[in-house]
Length: 109
Length: 231
Image 1 (cartoon, rainbow over the protein chains, first blue to last red):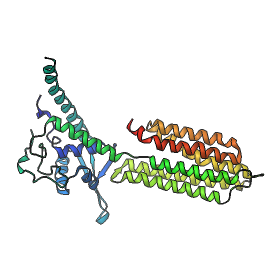
Image 2: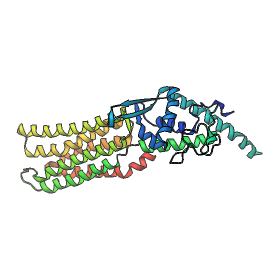
Image 3: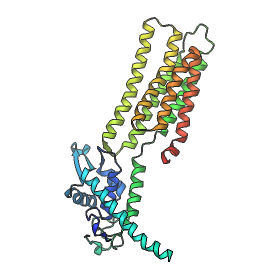
Image 4: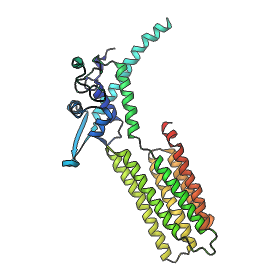
């Protein structure tokens, strides 16, 4: 089994971290841009770039509330983003299982 | 399948050492990200996020436990031996203040865990905090109504001691049952039992029973909460 089955939108370290972090939120919750940046450890520019890719795929939504200094940008995982991450996790698990099986067979020999 | 952007060396690295904009399916050193590396990233990000988003009730349990133990204990020392009971004086003020401080500190503590998280959970938590304050306010108003209706000081004392514990117990039980949070549900049920049974200890004894039985239960919950969260 190859890694081609992994969703290329998610299969990047930064975007994988973003998706997993947002998936840890409860349904209906969102995370502020600054908190997400703090958790992921990216510069604002880098984070915006990755978020845009995820947003283009329909995996996250961003919303800007308020104006001026009180403005808050929030980010949330969409339903299709959560489903995509679940698919990604399933494929990843299969990849890891298939990679460990030959090793187990070798060890038996 | 994968975007390859590992050709920029460390250009995409940010201050934390994480690969940044220029990374795609590549790790920080530019090599393609494999399944094992992806699994490690997922586990790390998931653990970090859950730790950040977890709301600890330890501070609020401690504050309420100490508030009950000290406030109710002071009240009990103040009113015991009164024949006939004529009620507390400054101790009432101390209890009300301690409970108010406890409520505010609980709210602030939980709001801190909220910081950065918006949406339904934040709204739900604020509404819960407000409902406790409303419950306590209604309770004090009812105490005034009882006095106005001619209730004896003994009856008012039993009510004043038991009602806050009853409100808190009902709050914990109703909110934790929805989340299937059994330890907090047990605390709620215990507080209800203490509030109901403590009244039989009389206008003075009710303060002592609630101080020990409810206050120590809160402190016990504060002590075991971290273990329960990891269980």
